[in-house]
Image (cartoon, rainbow over all chains, first blue to last red):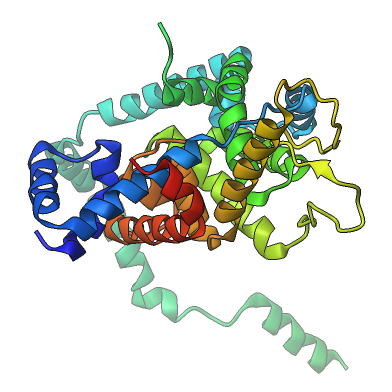
Length: 160
Length: 198
């Protein structure tokens, strides 16, 4: 292992966070490299010095201030959370859902149309359709005299 | 049975305020200490720690345990600290040249220097104070990201993967960052290192 490679492993070695194989590699390198041995020794000393820094305790008012901030937060709930806190609404919503599902099922449950029945109905209606066709194309009806209203107008003109 | 951080947070998500109280109790001291060492101002550190907790509380509804809780928590804290340092809003000159000589105590309460302190050996006490001050100064001199990496590694004992996520870098970049930080500390603390070297 090179000295450069040591850079990425030296702190892990000092902290005891290396895998066994990595640790053995580092120790093998250290046995042959006095500058890296010195560095390990000095990094250990730095780590020990950092341990000397005392800790502080949060002030007594800390929790109270956090509680006040939490209490001042606007109540923001998700749609589902709102339902979970309103059992009556949740009950009504679930009943509506069940009803909707049931109605959907009922619609699907209608048997498919019988094609023979459809054909029979069409045959039954056919004469009516034919009558309509005959009447709409009946020649004598097209040659009817002009409307009565026009005749009346002509007679009034002659009286003058 | 002790509930995990993730379990507590999921309980907070489902409306259990007592679980938030437990998280507050569990992490208030680590957070305040981390932030104090980052921003070097006790009042500001507490304000930022409170902000961290309120952000956690606000995010409870959307919380998904995709990573360790501490990764998420310290990521919020680190970002707040870095932003605060960059904004330079709360930076104060801790030791004013106009102020009387004070013991720069670690608890943040600067007390006037009193020779009649209750220490049996005042000289030893002053040496220790100077030593702590030197260590603190060396940490303060580190670039912000290196400082955060050292604090998370040394004091919060987070693993490399967690710290890398918090600082948004790769694990190899983090190892390089930590190496450079320890190199800088080794040089800065050389007089103390020489005495304590094993």
